[in-house]
Image (cartoon, rainbow, N blue to C red):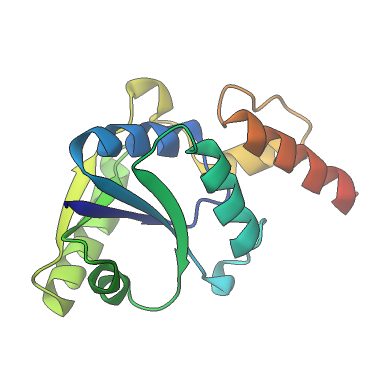
Length: 161
């Protein structure tokens, strides 16, 4: 079984993330969307909330599951029995950072490959940071995130006011 890990903060999951997940699901037997537990980034949603949002958004994909991880990605990849990591590239500006990460992961564990996937061109401008900002300012994010994420954003913003 070919397993791939798609790591990220997914704070929140966007349609760009979902596009990469759906295409990875066609290429691999098993896709694990690995939500990073990195409190240093001061996430908007807790790691448990982010995992639930991903789980709900991918429930129509039988070979995709959501999980959480902390620590080194290459260690998590090994524990999952995966051979590769999928990373999304939206623009040239993403490439340098992602390239550095891929090389460092290879140095830490040469058995872990990194595969870069670009989302559909309609999502290349999209980022979780922008989605949160638009939602905080009362804008419509329905074309940027799955419906369950839109609902969760609205609920969390309403509670914070």
